[in-house]
Length: 208
Image (cartoon, rainbow, N blue to C red; front, top):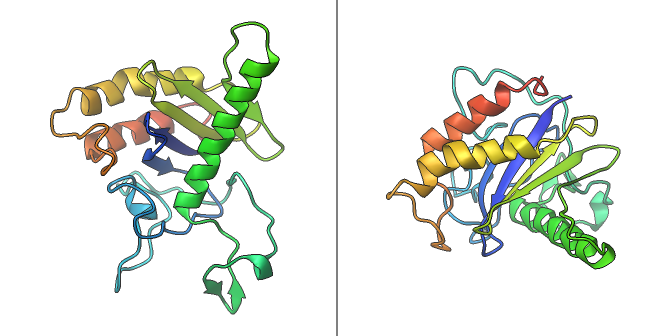
């Protein structure tokens, strides 16, 4: 079992934070203007002369695991039908990060709506599972959505997402006057938050 990635969406449906750990297929950098600033260095739009993004969004001496497993929300498109950059003479079928983030948010929004429409009780959508990954959701009263993708055999991680919110998110983001919240221009630009989240996830028994 393992954990693949973490997304945080604000109340305006924008991805304000991204972090990944075990992913085989990394997303392509977002297009210019496709994501907010400071969401993640690994998926930030490439500039002329810039080097390729690293396989992990956080670099530290502890970050020694290689990306040997992982999942994306959608794969399997015919490379000849995808309008993307070429790799070894063939077109890449990997989504850009802004497309991937919109897809993840769209899946969450659609399933939340479906649960509310089909259930006659006040039920919440918290997770769903496919053959390749499991999606976990925790939504705050202020409208922030914490979404985590993990191995399909992992137990529910909603409590872990709640701990991220009540711990480092509140300490380093909500209570930090230097972090611009709901600016619609910048993501969560705080290395203490990123390092703490990285340490929390790596300390979980499900993380291997």
